[in-house]
Length: 178
Image (cartoon, rainbow, N blue to C red; front, top):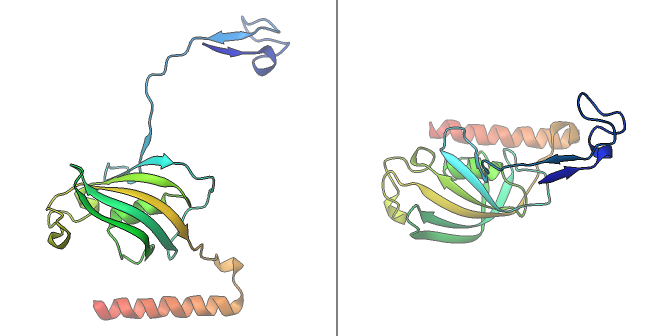
């Protein structure tokens, strides 16, 4: 039962068949509860929050993130556990599913990411870590910290030149790889 006092409902004036000053009583039935978020909208990366954050800022491209995580296979087999693991968002240093999941987290948030093979190691697996082909991965992650890159309008002229130089160097390195 949900009870709503008059001042929070229709007030002294009422509306339609509801008289002014009426206390409203609703009988409510919860039909479903969603505790997971489909980040990629195709079921490839699903996030379930285990501990909320009081922060509201999320990492962006080029943020350096620090994580604590446990990586398991879908059957619960522990693959690895890392503390203070760092990577740069957008630098393709980790699998796509991990990157997508972390970009949707806030500082000090703890979450469970379920990552399908198309956002992980696909049909190849990763024999070096005993990850079989076509494996669905489960990461239990705590986003410990991340650097928030300044927006261009927040930078001084010198900082803008330094950021451009950094982007140029990164682009040149990527070109050499191709």
